[in-house]
Length: 299
Image: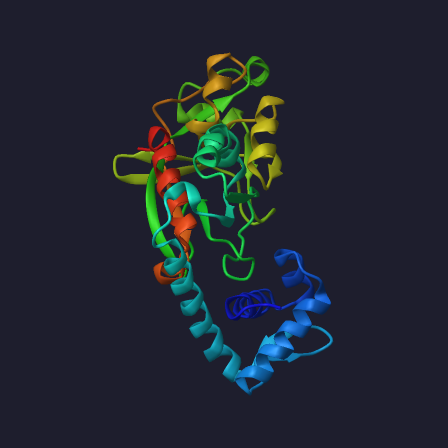
């Protein structure tokens, strides 16, 4: 039999994901158990909270009000449970999302230390370059690199990634080493485009306080950071990427920096999370740790 907080957790997850099946998967329950829990909760509060159709599940007007209060109650319960706990005793699932490069080069090499210090926390790490829906997909926090879209999330700046221009030795042997912006006319970029085909490929650089750009041809366009780096290593063009993910490649000569006097503007790195009142203590711990881990890599 579920207790009150567990009923609320089930309801919040169904409301956020809009699906009994997805909620069941994320909670490690059967779909039938989730359905029964929602029916029992609705019976106990005396109103319909969710409107079910064959295609989706939506909150009713009462459901919206109940959802907001449920999140506050769950946050308060989380704080009460952790009031007298030491950091090593804090437990639960922590779901985070960040770009591939940040996960691979910065977070994963240090994550063992965090897990050793907090053995009861299970980290679910999503590392794609797509824009996730923090609330609908149940993330505690996410890391974003670059300009932010308007958002209702709390934003905590972590610094800025320094960008470098680089190419492979094979590419430079074929096209030559660019020494000036005029030389770019004989070169090509690897185009990084989250929405493929959305715009022309641009080589960006800072001129004083102004960001300028040079339109260039691109033989290939990619939509994730792994492919972006891979295309550069394959000799397909010049890239402008965070130095944090290129250090070893530059050190061992697999990539070569070009036009160091024409670097793109540093890219902001931001931690995003829901309202502070709804933030679990384990999420606060992880975000504090993440800020420390990022420090050597940001300006």
